[in-house]
Amino acid sequence: MAYVIKDSCIACGACAAECPVSCISEGDIYTIDASACIDCGSCAGVCPVDAPQPE
Image 1: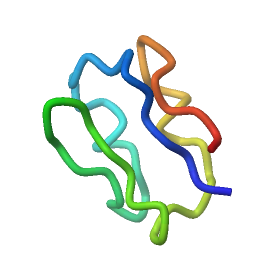
Image 2: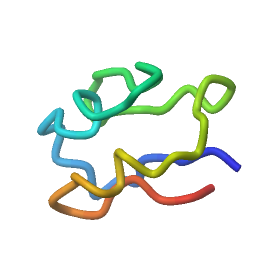
Image 3: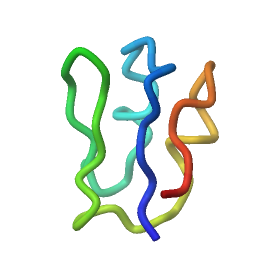
């Protein structure tokens, strides 16, 4: 199960910098490529607003 980034994202970039497989992309809010996500949860551990959540 991949992670997704919820609408609470503040686009701070902390999650993208932490992702070991670089599957997080910048936009109005950040997005995760579900096909590349390894479900490690590293992004969720650093997000100040808990935007990354298991799908």
